[in-house]
Length: 345
Ligand code: NAD
Image (cartoon, rainbow, N blue to C red; front, side, top):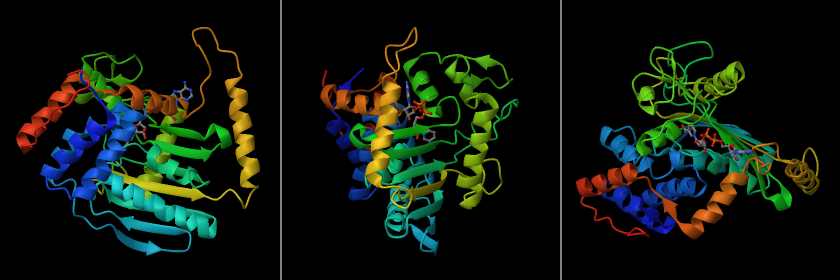
């Protein structure tokens, strides 16, 4: 498996998007997002997506020239139609607007319809935390998951992310699919020729399976935490799909991409930001002080795995699975982009 520096991957991804007709700044912006996901350890939302987005561009599911339209606005809310722009642009623009509203009026909520895939949600919730606000993002997506107790695809992986500034601990970052794992994690296991753990997926007959291929043969992802994750998933579909007008995943309105709801919340109307951050930091410290249970080496807090991964991968590079690398090389050939550069080449 080739290991590449983040910057090498960024350049390769940017050049491929440029060759596919994506304007330079957008090609670079989307590539930044994907490589940031790799750095955070979420390879499921990293450069693995480059061939997929290139396919979406060919199929017209992403419009690289789309103008994001403001449909409605109040001092604390906005509704955007992304017209199938890259989701990375739509979500960042939506969160920027939510942050500006929160800085001015204490709360900002932005709903985005007709966005292409937004990638890693944590990127956008962190934008708010970086400005001292609480940031929240959720989105629905295409049909891949079964409801609790059912055996048909009617829901998506319906992820959510909340980021909270946490003083010297930097940040609390919740960022996950409401299925046991994101679909991209199953895709990654398939690309690596590995099995997935029990409890992630059912095959098309509703039987538990550890074979990732079964998901792509009409199988289903399972909700996390049984009926509780199922309820969270429905909530995400209601806010990300119904409220935004993007369409609930199982509805006739839904076609593809992500319906996205985002919020930025000012802390100051409730308590001083300094006190809040200090108490969140203390809370997380109390978790870290808990002795590890048998089989564990330490207690982690949400956001810690991503921060650690980034530090290591910036230093040691990003391992790209053979099949993902081959798919990138194939796109290079198709688009006439010469790709080279592997730290271990
Ligand atoms: P995951 O199961 O890897 O969970 C990640 C979350 O769990 C993070 O908040 C992380 O800090 C925390 N975490 C991990 N180990 C921990 C531990 N030991 N202790 C405490 N906290 C811990 O995530 P996932 O569900 O596979 O999702 C991966 C990525 O996929 C996310 O970034 C998500 O936003 C993205 N996603 C996007 C879409 C989309 O349609 N755009 C859909 C699904 C998922």
